[in-house]
Image (tube, rainbow, N blue to C red; front, side, top):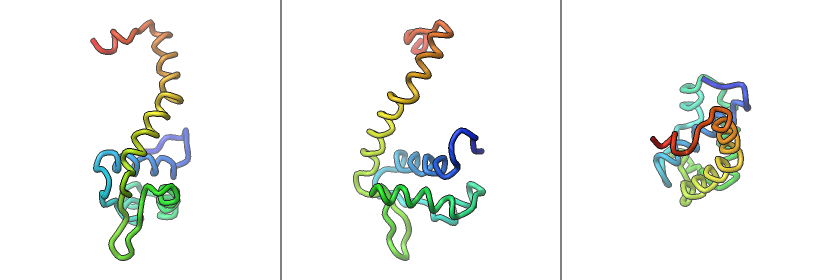
Length: 109
């Protein structure tokens, strides 16, 4: 379920980010307990992921109601994820493509 390449709370954060990107601003997010049970991790791990997203203004907590994606969160996350892909992931993909002798045309065919 989890890989060993980065801390679990960051992998949980990535799951939350994916939900926000999929469901958009205002999306009701799973509670800390529900997500901890779903991911089979300690609730403190999930709380740490949510805390990071709240500190960035991407998730808001409404007392007694739940956790929601903040207004503008989806657009900010999309821009951030695109930038991260280009800066971190694409260079590895491009290197692997070169190693395998693949071109962009090969991928789109």
